[in-house]
Image 1 (tube, rainbow, N blue to C red):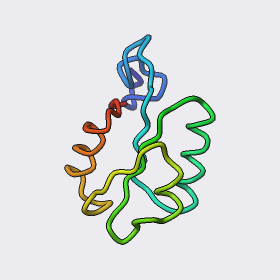
Image 2: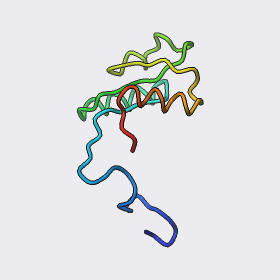
Image 3: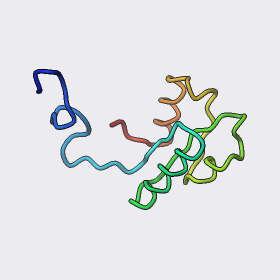
Image 4: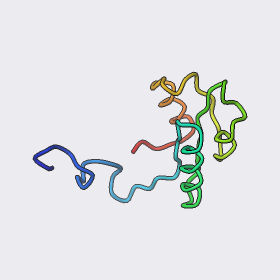
Length: 91
């Protein structure tokens, strides 16, 4: 570990060696969410998009392979539960 704390090169961070990310959960909206989803899908990932009731039918909800309703984008426990239920792996 770096004397300044963990870094991206620190092997203790991230998934175990050999682990593969298959499902990406995106808890964002708008153009950035669409761009992330397209890039992830181009790389073969299954993309799950979070959305709120207010965003039902928005462009980003149609970009993913699956869209899941969450109460609020800032509701951390609800986002984690939705991600787990959708099969996203923690990284």
